[in-house]
Image: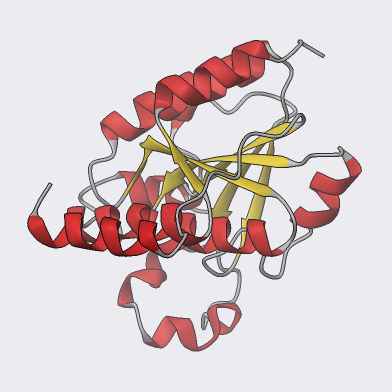
Length: 215
């Protein structure tokens, strides 16, 4: 840990940040944007997330064995002129790779999407923005969302922030989220832990899931 990070942690701790929200009783797993456009490092929006996918798969497989709801997300644009990307399309040239109906907006096969697992299509960073995610979770009486996916500083962070704002307990699995930038990844995890979510180890998340009764 560098001196600046140590000073930040001391500063935040002294002011009561970084408290533990804790796991709830009824979780779902949100697998954020593990689509080919983001997991193929040859693509403009892609990077090598092999380790993160492997760790996320562990979370997903335990959740599957326990009958815990899983929702995958994918960013996809239908309009030929990217009108459904709004002004965001002006910021990132790579959004042109996120065309509906193409392999790039399909979930990476290493995630192993199973029959009955929903893929929620979204247009922006947060899985909550402009989607029906809240009623999906409420109807299943979900109180906790375990978040895996990419990118840590973008869609993962935005989803975690919106989760806590909508009354869910956001749990970000540190080894199962990734980013194109290691600096952005580290800062996002620090900020999430201090203000919005519990950032937990893979081992902690798996232990929690295994304690739940299979439905």
